[in-house]
Image (tube, rainbow, N blue to C red; front, side, top):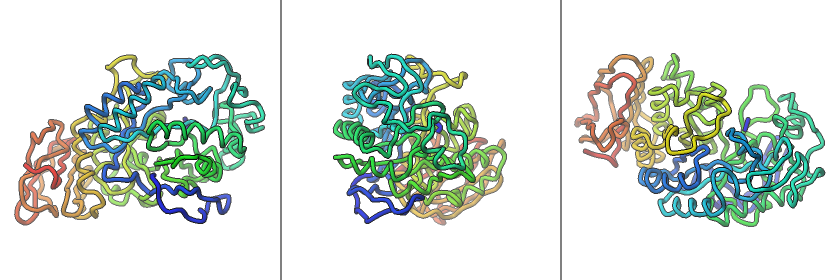
Length: 454
């Protein structure tokens, strides 16, 4: 919508509303482990995600897969119906409880942990019968919520400079839960606990901006299980009352400014500005970065799959640069803003499976936290090393890039893991001085790392 694993506990976190209590669980700054790349499989059926974990995500080295909301939701073909829950049963169009459990098991077997997109700020905007048979009204959900469980501001958010309006009124007409209520917090925590009991590794909290950071932390604290990885959706807005920095004490936060910066640089700007892409944004530790997502590809604020090679190169950069924790978005083709997912195997963008991207997942896993060095940029081209473990060069220009560039790699022959051909079809020689001589075609990339030698 418009919109870690167990660590040391602390006494409190300073948020906009003052000192808030921290749960016994304290999220780490990035997904734990050596495989930190996430693939978001937007609106992909759970059976399909299970297959992708086995066939693509696991072999490529992805550490996480984020799946769309599992909850029962309102009827309808539009994508946003998934973001109007009517109960916390797993009974949506993407699959039932068995499908979900089987997916988690298959992904876990493939070495990929599941992150669940959790819609907990609100319920629906009307009345009817849900995808799992639940009859509901806007402020009445049998066995879950009644009128008193919702905020009393029953009108749309109008003023984003007013914190109370943003967090207590209704987001595009959706019934806004009173997340300051113990009853509501307990119900939400119970839902999240249930998903954790099924093996989910953590959560993306949808529309977190529309809940006070203290409320989000309280929900997390109410959980009986270790909450796992935790990332909040908080869209930055200049001059707005609610800012992303308020939520970094709860877990990671989606850094929406990153995608806008990427778009500006790749569409006529200077790629040199990307060297310090974290400047003026969240600290790199709690920042989850992405080129696009389902909201931004529809509102035009970022590049999308429709931008072709520039979109692919942007994802190569996402996985090569050390700032943030990268999330590769993989959705479906659309012409209608509201269109729901395709009904079969065709129509998916499969960005996560492009050989340029899967090769870069391995790059990211190999270079780890290695420093950024050997930076070079000129117009729509750039290059840099990641310590002595990796090197990448991008050419987003319309002509060939013919240049000798310095790397910090040991001499040898390396596979170009950013090649669209895959399988080490292209090899690059690094000489004894650490130099590469590149003849890089327009709209192409080369990426070398010590884990893929020729």
